[in-house]
Image: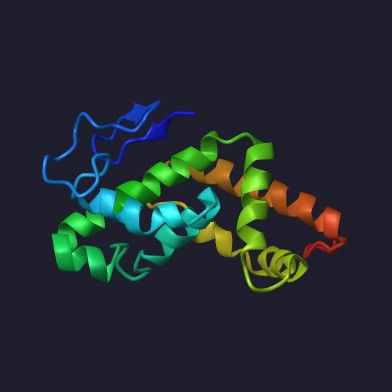
Length: 171
């Protein structure tokens, strides 16, 4: 499976070492905001959906700008904001490339790592729809619609599996 290179913004089948800074502490990750974000945070989140949720959580709903104290302290606010926004867009695009089966498996992995039991999460998400704000701002309307349609389909499947009533009595 090919992966996005956070160094050069290209997709590679292997780890990209062609753009590595010579003084980098790890040969495959130069010292850039995006590489730091990947190395220290995103790589620790096992599901793509979890990464999407995390990156969304770094976006200030009042300004649309992203904040991460550690990255800002090292690289400055502008570079940190850009790296997080770019990562948010890339993770979102990668999620959309998943087939529905892959999305379901990834979503199940994310939900399994949450503290409330699976049924509680599915009931709450069905009522509150917190996933609606997860797409990055620059996403095209058709991408946002596809994301929401996929999530609603997955939630419907999960409700059926768990015997959870639909929040819409006519559904």
